[in-house]
Image (tube, rainbow over all chains, first blue to last red; front, side, top):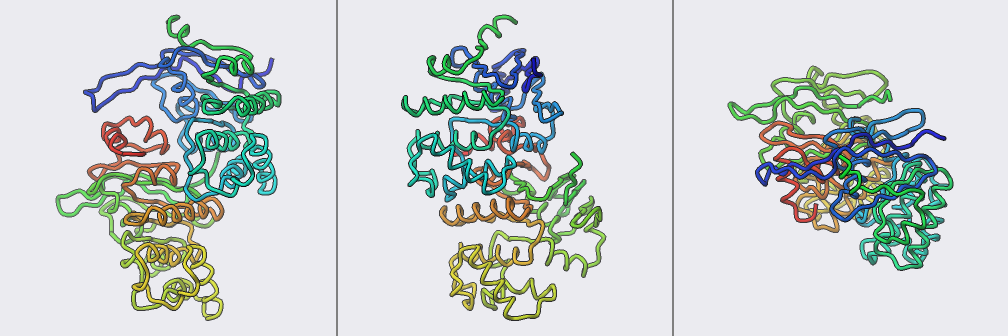
Length: 233
Length: 258
């Protein structure tokens, strides 16, 4: 079997709240997990178990307390937990895609440009990046009249689709998806699940959270239960 | 990865008598990136910027620039004339108050053209052409090229100051609260412009700001200063979402919409 694209080894996370007298919140304890290319692993467990925290750690948005987060980048395995910031930024440009539930963009930038920009940063030349952006936005059924507008005034569901289009247009080999279907109706959720399956079938390694059990079942090759991982320690 | 920075700062310190301005600051900046320096008033961020940009002489440390090949230049030992040349060509400095960074007695066009003339441009038509182009890039109507800066609004003055700094194609620009005191719509335009210049032209920028929202949108890396010292540095989103140092936690927790 092919080598894993993402390896979490003994990952622990706690937050020290200095403003609250240094109280320590333990969120994850000694979690180990592998995701291979062409595999979609769905995280499970009640809310508060640290599912989103795990994805944020893998993206380098949170800082791990202990453990390693190994990301395959070509022939190299890079530890996100200890790599210098610019190395993590390089991974985010072309290797690690992350769909959060927030769309944070510079105001006044058009939707098409936001999506195409992500593809250009991942290495596609300008015409191909724009073509990929158009394809992703069409697939997600975002009306074409919105493409030249900045997404600031869009509905939650429209913004979420811009967020997803941006990530899939860049074609990252590793995807971290935090409830990508959360604010979408059934038809749009199905379109997103289509993209997820497509990426997986092209060989992407996917680690995902879904609030909706049916969505999870539709794309998961395997489930990873964080509450079981916690009890096991 | 063998990528080299274009600016390497080591141990830069500056005191005002017994008061510390900034102490023992290290920083590397690479082409095409925006680095934010944040902290409250009195944290030393402007002192640091002034040292890096040649407005203040540090007491200790090294500030080395590499704009061509492997040729590192130690800024602090350069002659005054070489420094001035560097400040007009490869470096830019955008001041918090545009009136400090503009020449108020000459026209907008002359403000933008000045750096070109300083590096030897003599062809009036071409200088004017470049001025028009840059006024349009910062979204100032080219019809106002012969107006004086004092006839402009604060936001336009700030954009004019940016055009004046960027016309000669610098590699690195220092910016002291460039969006402070601007309307939000004007601020958005500036952020958009800076992001595009960094992405498309490989411009690097060190930007001092107290606005963490601006830092998040514009800068991928960030440095937090307090009492003249760097207390934490790293990925901007990590520092804002998972700050480790008590002071960074306080800063991040104090923002309404970070």
